Length: 589
Image (cartoon, rainbow, N blue to C red):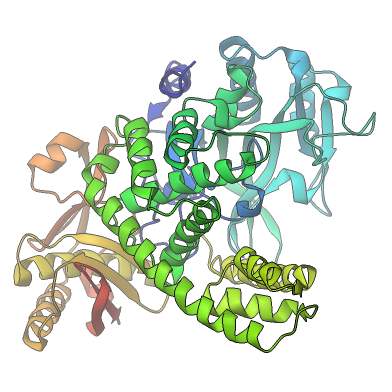
């Protein structure tokens, strides 16, 4: 079965059971400082998981684009990816464990055709004051799974959330496919990393709210949040050994073979998989309508890291020319029918890939000069310290593989283990810093956040009034202190223009206008003059927020109820974000 068929089959299954399909959101979370990328289908749904009414109802289904970088070191095996598509279904205060588990089981066994004996599941074993999930265990038993197929695990394996310090969370039940090979003997279970069990689906039962003091209380609205990898279920359905054999990857691997002139083999398999995976992620990040570009911070840093890792691997294969745009073109051809933004942003994707290669070549040249100075001070037979290898890599971007190659040519050994130790420490610090983004959490929809979000609507409108209708939002980021707003414009704004924008926003605030929310079909919303930001595809029914004659936008974020709540608006800074994109930082109150 092809990926397109699997997407359609999944959505149809849940539509037949009362779910409404919602569109995939951008890979770049809107107004969410807690994460760099959309990592799950639940990100755009946080307000509704907290109790706000979704315009499409209580039962939802989607295929969501996702980026995850916590598994980046695992990329190269058969099942882990940086970019993937999450098949998800949700119950917002409607059905709960019984129906959720039954529907997942029916889809896997009746639709996908997995024999029941090939399934294994895990359930929550309880923790302190949170009881053991005997209910989920009993449901699996009634369905027909044996005791030897159901495993109890703790908070690490079978508890989701909260994404930050507080918010919705709860036990989950994870569904695994037993590939049938006996790796570890009788004691092996789904929590083992030997490869015998492949996780397919995760059903999260959001029934608790974690409070600031660390305690848990039951939620008034109990939700179900599920997620399944399209890539993995497609592999299992087609009886393949890895995701890279599916139609999502096979053409990419073939293009790498053709462009490098080297056939795929066991010796280069990992490198080919990393190139295919990273280029897919890079193409989707660059192809997003929010126009992220490679940089040294935030999403741009992750993007740059992925591109440069691909460049290093290709250069180590001895390929002199830049083949990244050609690989990206294959990816666009695979995915554009489903995600048309890739075609719309084709020129931008190619341009940024060409630009980043040029920058990296200069970085390598500089790093090579520094490396040569280091080697000049060493004698044949000496050992290059791991700390020096790491400095060349971290400070100058010089790949350790290149350092090893130079050392070998000069008869110098290298402390590669010392380098790996330092790199691991660096990665752990980076991971901790990334986790720090979750302070406040995905559920941070405080009054201040709502005010700042409302201010972005007024700012967007004011910029279009002052600078022209060609101005559109390119991204935004909000925390409790300030808003950051990116917009399409090709020059620095003058002081007079900034003053005009501030005046318009403050005028709207002083008028004490109610923020009105209407739900309507997307065609009606666009016909009424509502601005649609970013998305090429919307849900059938959308929310439109209107602020007097100042602003009318399709949006799903938190808002103030009246502009007077903002009190005042002040621009702190206007600067360049990337080519053709400007950035404003501002505060309210």
